[in-house]
Image (cartoon, rainbow, N blue to C red; front, side, top):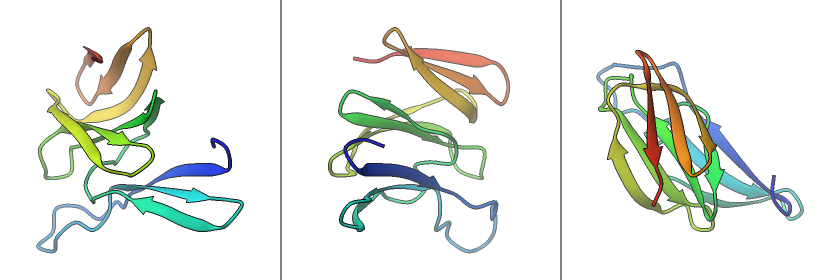
Length: 113
C-alpha cells in the first residue's frame, strides 16, 4: 500500500486450455475513493511482484506461455519493458539494485538499469 493506493496481482490455476488466458494481471485501486485506477494487460503476472522506484516488476511463465518478467509503470499500468527469463519464476525479490529470481529450476539475477 502506498498513499491509499493498493496494488494486487490476480491469477488463476486455469492453464493450458483452448480458451485464451484471461488472468495473470495486476491492478491498482485506491482505498480512500474506492476507485480502480488501472488494470494491466493479462498474462503479465502469475507470481508475486516487487516495487522498484516508479515501477512494478512482475513475471509470467510456466503456464503454456513463454517465460518473461515485466516492468510496469506504477502510475499508469503500462508495460514499460519485458525480458525473457531462462525458466519460469516461482518467486522474486529486489535487493541492491538487482532482481533475484527463484526459478522452477535454479535461480537468476538481473541488474536493473
